[in-house]
Length: 117
Length: 114
Image (cartoon, rainbow over the protein chains, first blue to last red):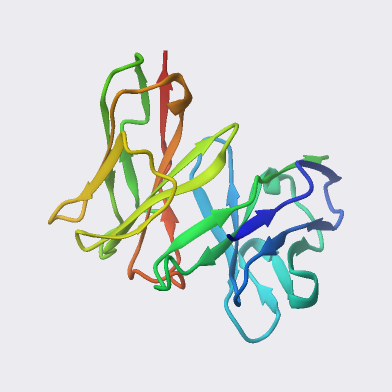
């Protein structure tokens, strides 16, 4: 069965510092990979997604992620963090549901990002 | 604002009771998904509907059921509620039914079972 691991439960960075959030997945076939962000009291918003092609994916709000098949990883990065980036970040893998291509997402446990001024 | 609406925002009820959560997808979206977010289980996929038909099922309990109506809104029914059902329930919608579609999430319904 597919699974997603986000090793860091909580990360604290200073505003302006770079950021990398880790994500490892376990899935037999080529995965569909996503990063979502959840601000307090809000639903989830898609930051970026990877299906195929260029392994470096650009997303919204200045985020990017790199797919590394050899490491089964899809880490999220941002060169300079803003205070408004404080939120919880979820990595997800999209899997075929029973051989179909329907839209089941399996999420990691999330990483809470705190930004210090 | 994703365009997905969920009602109610908060719900407090007692064990053994039944509740109905409602979701209206974004205009033009045909797929609706339900997810449960709890402290111990994290964010889990429950079920997907596309244009009124069930498409995918996740870890949805038998006490839970869902449907999508002709006007495309969806309802998640939770019955014989237990303390462990306390969670944030999200609805998401997308245009199509495949995993490549971007899922837009609503703000959620927070359920507290006492």
